[in-house]
Length: 113
Image 1 (cartoon, rainbow, N blue to C red):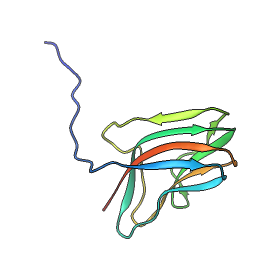
Image 2: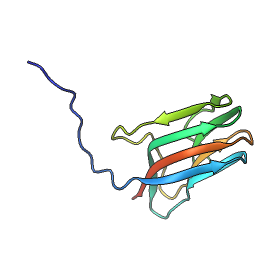
Image 3: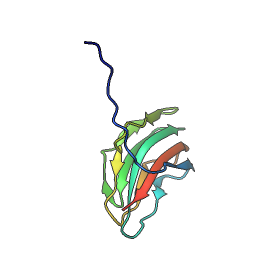
């Protein structure tokens, strides 16, 4: 018997692309808090122009530890059917950069209840 990997098709909603383009350090709000809604990150392309630590946050609560990046570093989180990060209801999804360096890319999110 031969087989193929089975990928379950999920109706995750419409992925909203959110451009990321800032050189200021601190919080980068990808999706503001929405009443009775949460944000799900399904895809991400992120590049940094200098040394920084990137932390994903659910409002003020860290969803990851600080991820160290050097100049020209990057990260790709590809679509897998499950969200990479999920916020709680009524909470913003934030990417924090520990240094004032260029952070660029796109986050693909779904905001739903």
